[in-house]
Structure formats: C-alpha cells, structure tokens
Length: 202
Image (tube, rainbow, N blue to C red):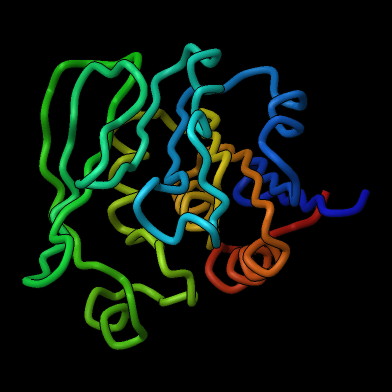
C-alpha cells in the first residue's frame, strides 16, 4: 500500500499515512486524543496550504483535543480552555496557544525552548528535523502523559516532522497520523527508526 507505514513499537501501533486527513479519518474507529499543530492563517500560508475552515472537521470528532494555534490569529472553533506554550525566547512570537476542546477548564503554561536549529535542539536535548514549525518533543511527551493513559490512541491529522508519533512511541500510546508532504512523511519514518526503540513493520 503506497504512502502507508505501520509499526509495532513496545506493542503499540504507530501508523503514518501520506494522504489528506479526510482519507485517514475513514480508517479510524477510536481516538482518545487529537493532538495536532495545523497550518496557521498567519504563517507560511502558501507552503502549508492553509485555508479558512481547515480544522472544521475537528467538530465531528468528539474526543478531547489539543490544538496548537498562533498567538496572533483568532481560533475558529469553540473551546474549553487555552494553554500557553512559552517558547523561552526573547524575540519574535514568544508564545503560542494550545486550545483544549471537549476537555477541562484548567489554564496551563508550558515552558519549553523553541526548536528552530540544531544548536537550539542540542541545548534542549532534542533533535532539529528541518521543519519550520517543529514542536519540542518533551512538550509533546508531557501533554501525552497528562491527557492520555498508556494504550490510548492519539491522532495527529497534520503530523509534520513526526514529533507526536515519536512521543507516542516513547510513552506507549497508539498513534495514527497523516502528512501530505512526502518529504516530511519520509523523514518521519526515518525519525521513528532513529529515535523510537525497535520499530517493527506490520
């Protein structure tokens, strides 16, 4: 099957699809958490293919959702709370927001360094995968630990550099994700083999 990679890691299923999320959703029977960083309306719009309504499909998914979003643009969906990712940097956009849907009413701040170069990644004990919107692996692991249980299934419809996939593999969560860009999809597969323990194809 072209554009599909399935792994068993620590007995968890990690599935990545090189396709549009509308196709991936058809494959899914159960999701415990949506954790995603979609295209923003004010950053690399053409490159990422942003359009108004790009995350409207999340309204049809009734599990808890954590959606990263720009500090500068209005979030287009109803939400229960807003969390802050403090990038611990002194220039540019110093934070981004994480909107929680179908969840609780706590408002939290997460302090994790921005990963935008190999130097920054090394300082944060992370790896830089060349993606301009890469999120810190330790932030994603923390969110997964806080909002899911071992064996739960996490869905990322905009999987980018594969950070959520790797985090799920490390924290014993099942993962389903999709990425339209073939380069990022291929790099995510390589990253899983490099950073997750003993991936086995299935």
